[in-house]
Image 1 (cartoon, each protein chain N blue to C red):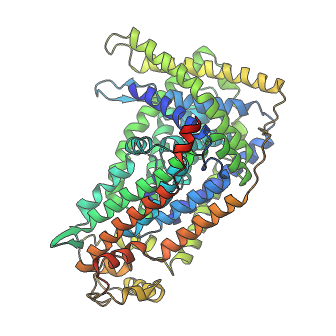
Image 2 (image 1 turned 180 degrees about the vertical axis):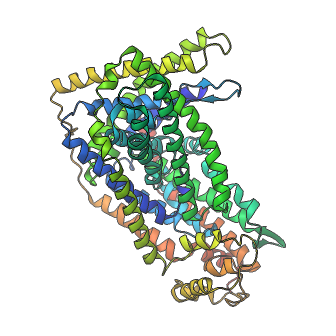
Image 3 (image 1 turned 90 degrees about the vertical axis):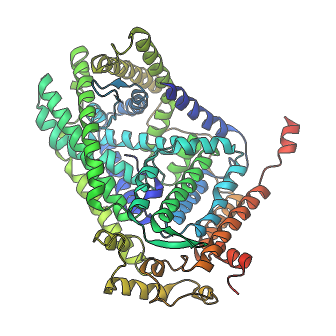
Length: 351
Length: 270
């Protein structure tokens, strides 16, 4: 479920960063207004708890596989939406920094996919109404399973949408969805069961822990940050699209052209592609560099892909040159790095 | 279960690397954060079928590695065990996109393979840059840098506390896993019932610990902020680091160094 940097475009990554930043700011405001600063260490320790809990597995009967806790819904039940959102964001940050689980630019996507949905959508709109004021075991089980399943389905939908908008994968939208949603249905069922059993244990052993949760009032306004977050994402995306469209028409437009159906057929000459080509020709940086190429065909001869890819590899001669150049520049990069190396001889001598 | 030990050891190792005094460690964390993000954006801004043009950018993670004296073995191992999501999703490209976009000799290569290779290359570049930066900075400095860049202190304190208790709770979880494994012959105690109770009691201990921690912090005057004696100050070297790298990224994005070198080497440009 963790998005990697390699799968997103700067556009999508930036937009989701902005959205995640807005919701984080909203949550910190919310927390600072509530006086209960006892939750600061509680949040930190609970974040570490989720890490530790993810290391403990249990066997799923009949399948031979094992499952573990994801933790988003459980944290929301224990901490309330704003504090849980910040805790989840911090967990994802540590995962990105230390385990390369999800990239740095993709952090915004991950925080939205795994934090926003359980905290501000599922908990106030599904879990609380379903569990009720005085939840019994059965109701809690139902609420946790429904909540976890819906939360993970929304998260998976987010992953697919972001990957599609970035255009890195060739999978058509529907197939990608068919791949992701069923897997996350299973994961969601397990997550719901685990959440319900842990909360049930707490209710049996130390029910006062669950009564302290400061969320009845906060839950009601839960949908507001969702709207704000989505709005920011939309505005930033739109703004960036219009800005990038003139110089870099291969991100979003590309994905849109792609998902309209023609996967491997020679694409038809349509106004969009022509416009893109036109823009590319107009704005190609260093067009002069292309000129001396011997066998360079004219733009109309090129197939659509290489035409859009102005620095791509249009013919045999230049493709060899491209690869050789790539290898040579890699060697050069290593050489530069070697020059920068610390003088280890003196270091080790001094030790 | 083996990977629990590995994971716990890995974090400790990264932090040990970061605690040494290296040229990279002396660079201001804000500068490193901004440069690394700019690097990632630059890498991701390339087109879907561009491989050769990306390769010169490898200079950034490589220089970070040598400046931070990060062992290559460590980075490569981290890359291999890192999230396989990109590898998995990208795997569909060669199956779906079969239009040849490039020929090697007389052998045509489908667009899907080229774009898959580009995804893998971007994965390697972005992840190794982030890890190398981390190994040369450490969590405390990263958080200080983030705070100075405007991230709310509630969030950075949260990351620091999480990190502080990660090791404690991992050890506790590890002991519970071992105890359960010793008491459950075969698969008897490995099901959801025992698991729920186990997580529940780990949670209760965690809550008690949080309470003790909070009382102890209050006794020492904690008011929601972590104060440090050192203050961050940008020095000349930091500015050179920042401006130099940003300039290089822009330059590499505008000038196809790989293409120029290739033309020079093979004479295709003549």
